[in-house]
Length: 167
Image (cartoon, rainbow, N blue to C red; front, side):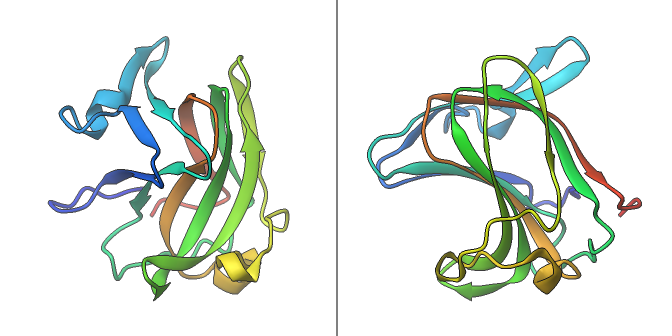
């Protein structure tokens, strides 16, 4: 889904004292891509203490661009790790200080590869944290993000937006 533009791509950021081991600042995001049985997958390693967290994400186009994903029936991905995390599909327009209204789903990663299926209508709502119902923003999605709250590793493979045609 993501497009390659000269100044856009995947980003990763630690917050409140958290840090990344992989990807590191020297190798960049590509350093977290490792070889697996059916190609490359994302392997994140991090340290999170107290109220810290790490995040990664990508714009689904230019900063001011968005896609109508209202036909989305599920986001599917394979995961493994030792952490709790949230997957967000975010509105393209900034609300306040790098915050965006978002549909947000929480999940836990375990030691074995598992398929995670996140369905619209099952998102977590919390207006004070900009978490809104999917149908409020589904026709103007600009950002795909993952927020990781504890643990030390998360591996992700085969992210699929089900029900959405080619963008």
